[in-house]
Length: 79
Image (tube, rainbow, N blue to C red; front, side):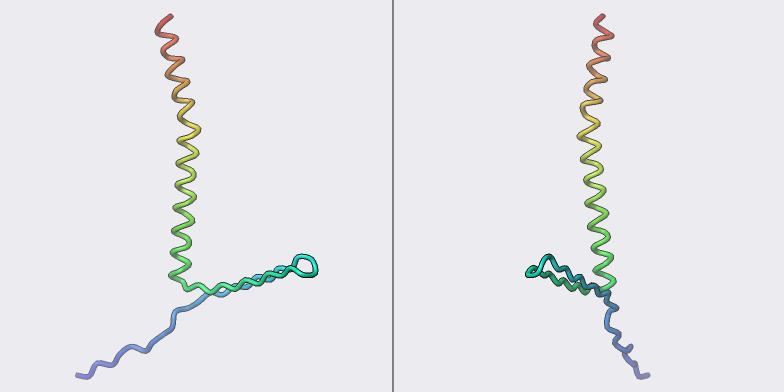
């Protein structure tokens, strides 16, 4: 039996271009080409960044409240 290799299919790419002109002299041109695997990786990175910042903000805001509740609880017990 002869095995026939599967045909090669190049990865599907997403392309984007941004042209920005500021004034008469300043110009910026950006081109991006990303595969579907790259988009998945970018989505994972962005979601992990957003999740970590939400946890950090929750920890930063929640700690003083818990501390204040502990202090208020001690005042009630001492009185």
